[in-house]
Length: 281
Image (cartoon, rainbow, N blue to C red; front, side, top):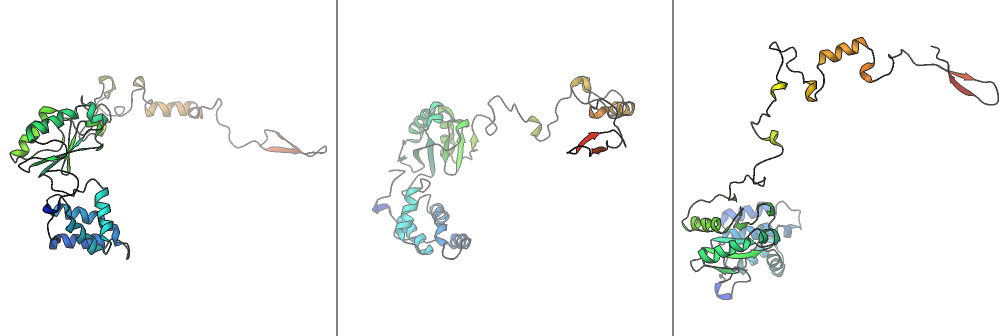
């Protein structure tokens, strides 16, 4: 049994219709598009059909979507055939899409495929005899930092190796709940050694304060000021004292600030007029 391609005629059901709940969902999606543009809803409607029909879309389901959207059936076939997330043949209850693109391959996607062959009993484009598992090699799924990884139905499972894949298969066989994401204890996509940047962004985190930067007095008069020795700004009371002793010094002026602005005197002698600073007020 294949996990890709189109199901043979013997496996195609004779009829299909949305359940009342799914029909209501479909109508709400169609209503989002302007009049005459309802065909734009074809992808979300195919997704609803696939979820309703055991994770694959038979031809009668494509026909049902086409009739609902009043579009040629061949157009729906084209969409369903183009996008790889639509299955046109039966797949197992747990559909493994294994990334084997370069990052995952370098990190051991071959071990993942071997574990599926050994423990699930199926390889690429195959479904296990018990119908529990299907396997399909796919291109990059966008979790390269956490390679190797697989997508099982809607969820990503990352940082796998042979043993972790076997444990995942055993849990699914036993009907146990599995946890998507990294399988080696990593948090999301951070470094394997743990977070090294943006530590102050973590909830509840308080950066460590050096002992030399502790408040020098108990009354708090200077305790909230940074220590210049640690590269911080001088205390506010020192800045104020310097400004009072040397007006304008806080701006970096060479001399105290002068009041007013020099008046420019216009000379009218000769054939042209010039300007000179007289320094008069």
